[in-house]
Length: 140
Length: 307
Image (tube, rainbow over all chains, first blue to last red):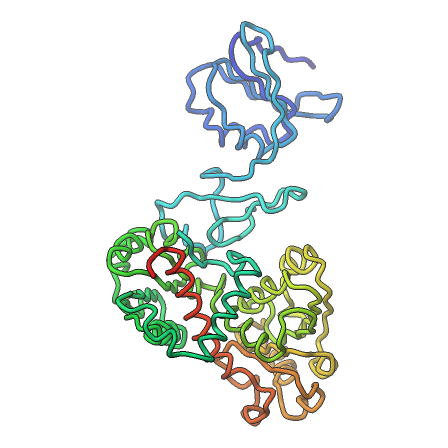
């Protein structure tokens, strides 16, 4: 079965998202608050990955590469101008994540001081391990 | 602004310098008696820890400085809901350096990010206690005359013992350290410490459940308390508790120049009969803690341009 999503003129296509992570990325990027057309395609057939998710945003808005890199370090971000790809970006695991994920350690200072930013540092790139800068608990 | 939150905030060269200063203080305390004249240490203890607080206060007083602070959260503004960040900013207006104890992990880091004066972590929950590690390092250095090429056994609760994790971290940067992990299965060193510290730094280590077996190999024996509440059932606790009590019989298996350390307080894990053994170094370790805190206060105040 094929499914046609209108091509976008100016905006962003986040491709090669591992199947099942598209919705997480959609939520973390706050795409539900946009009023431009946004398409989340789940389980699209992929020669390389078998199945993949894709997000298309029909507006030239800033997207946090840190969030994209954290959720799906394998993705390609295509920047679209006048209907064609003007730039392809590969993302990596970011060194720091600020207010992307929350520390779940009940003993961490962030549980009692609500104003504190939740900051995580990448401590093991090979295994993608992030640790809270305050209590050093690994992100789950 | 330089602070001490984690023992790894200091390089090994800096740790070695602190140890040298501490040894000089021990040799000639008069030379340091007025180094911190007119300077104030704020001891912000959001949970009680009498020994650590007294050690910091004694350290500052012996440097000729003075001390302000509180010894539990109920007598501070945090009981009115003040944030750690605001407390740090306010106290920066009154004092020259802060020593902070807090039940929440990471609170001293938050203080350091907001204070305009140096902050020393005096213990944050089960997370870090770097000045205990400083005391441990000075004790090892004074007993062995070196901080490299020795065998250290950690005995007891290696799972929850933050002093153990912190000392292993500090020692990971010295050459030729062999670690013997002596604990029941229930209280083994967490796998992340093994992976992130021991294996990452290529430290040699072995694990055993038998203190007797390990004793003859050790240059340093670091004892910790095995607490009943750490066990899932009383049967296991009763089966294991005596295995990790250091008695004169077990001491006979150790080297004649071995040193026994313990972060204290002890309950029953070191028999009182051992106190008279010259290898018992745990009370000396308490005194060393004060000297290292003096050296640390001097270093941080000096780097902040306050002395």
